[in-house]
Image (cartoon, rainbow, N blue to C red; front, top):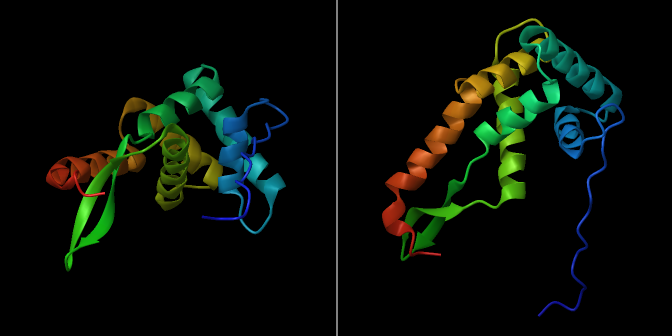
Length: 155
């Protein structure tokens, strides 16, 4: 048994404009090489574009996109008696949200387009509609978990 104390849960800070923790999580994932001001600039431009296109609150669009992309099941590779099995397991809410953010940003980075703000806003709007690469990634993960349901007893 470990002699160290348990790690304390960190509370995420909220961003200056929207006062939202989810926004801060997203901005921290956008950020590269410690350039947080640039990450905020990209995010706010994407939100402005969403506002212009949909005429809805961009924060609600962001929440809806992340909810649509958040997975509930995933697979983990486990070695059992010499063979590797893909074992499905349930994902808790915080990890699901982190995966959704990661998938949305990866999909938006791969998109062809002018700049990151344009690509991010397009990916978020596609996720709300139920299309896009991030949604495809979620469906693929769920399909793999469903296909390997027979190994669910292995932990």
